[in-house]
Length: 230
Image (cartoon, rainbow, N blue to C red; front, side, top):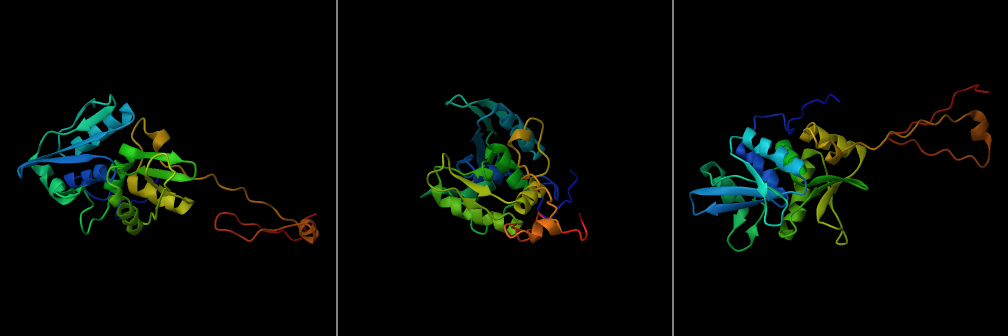
């Protein structure tokens, strides 16, 4: 589907290392080497995620390797690099570890990387995973989606894994506009729009019945009557 590029979409500006903050919105980790360099890494569930993320990282001028983490799952990581040091300075706190920087603003490119690392369709919308080891970040990340036109809510405490959820056709459309098309292999994990509800024809004969119920018009469904219909 052709989509108009929005101001915040992943295609709106050139790629840069700032976009890699999207990996820190989920469970990605940044480690500093003194005050000279930093290294970014993220462990993912499926191999396709690792290879897609490695391509995205390389497009932003950073090296990226795919290997097996200690847990056996695929991992993407960079070497220690000077150009990643601003991410470490912004996202690491000596007293609390990873934290959302003050004044942080999401971009479509960041959300795309976030979706590639931890996004998945849920039973009632689309889920973007958040770091279970950094619970203080969750609410701020959900709030950061609102200025992009994608209001989201945190899953409840009974959820299998912490995540923010985007629901509703308009919000999912806005999310798709932000993150662009899925790379090969990512289609099943990409946001999808809910099916259109069929239009229902209400005849004068039906509306005259005492038991007939005609729902109020909604945004997505328009009920109409045709005069003189037999």
